[in-house]
Amino acid sequence: MEWMYNFISSGEINKHQLSKADVTDADLLDLIATIETADATALLDLSEGIVACGYTGPLTCERKEDILSAVVLHSCVRILPMLQQMCKGLELYGLHKMVKQNQPLFQPLFVPGHFTKPDADFLTMALLPVLSEVGSVKRQRESRIVNYLQDFIQSLEEEEVSSGRESRGEDDNKKVDETEDRTKENAEQDQITISSLMQWLTGQGHVPITSAQREKFKIHIEFDHDCQLQYGEHNLCYPLVNACSCTVTLPTRHLGTYTEFLEIMRQAVSNSR
Image 1 (cartoon, helix red, strand yellow):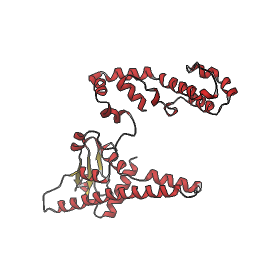
Image 2 (spheres, rainbow, N blue to C red):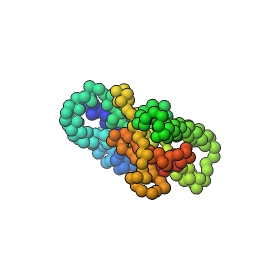
Image 3 (tube, rainbow, N blue to C red):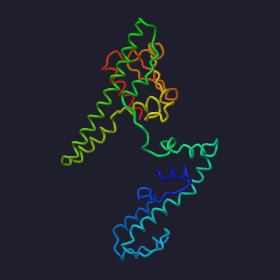
């Protein structure tokens, strides 16, 4: 919630930023809902709960906005001690001072929704394959698989665009039955996106925040040509991901065609959720 970050970074609460969306307490949410639909008599019946939230003005329908603002403010003030403890913890290593000095820079770390989603171009440019000697058979296999991966990333972006168009089109049509709704929800949950692929590869599904981090951000692509020696006779190998080092190792023996690549990659990403 943005008001919480503003308090952490400035020590102040801007009442004009607060809304009922900032209320998390179930009882207070019920009180707000009741106040919104209450008439003059019902408001008087709610006086005990309203006064407990710090409102001392007249209980009339004309003052509903003031009453609701008091309830919302009361909800937020209740968690100030926790935010103050958080500020105290951030003082370790001088982090709180840095937050106050660089409010816009640190905001994405505290407020959801401020991260930039990666696109196909960003993810493709971040790939850093570790290739074998030029002209070798291994190099040819590795180059082919890198092309598969780039095509796969591009196809994910096209699927996202297509899915977005279908969703917008359905908003204009009549509602489908519940079975179709559930089928669609399951399909959306299983869908692999650029963000979910990046999350699988690196542990984060968003573009690095600072320009310095973006410049250094690379996904190392390594290749395993000898999985049969390590694991014996087998029919299937999945890519091995090390998110801490942003490295993925691809088993070349099982990725001979684009169809095989797609099947294994989709299974690997989906089954890791």
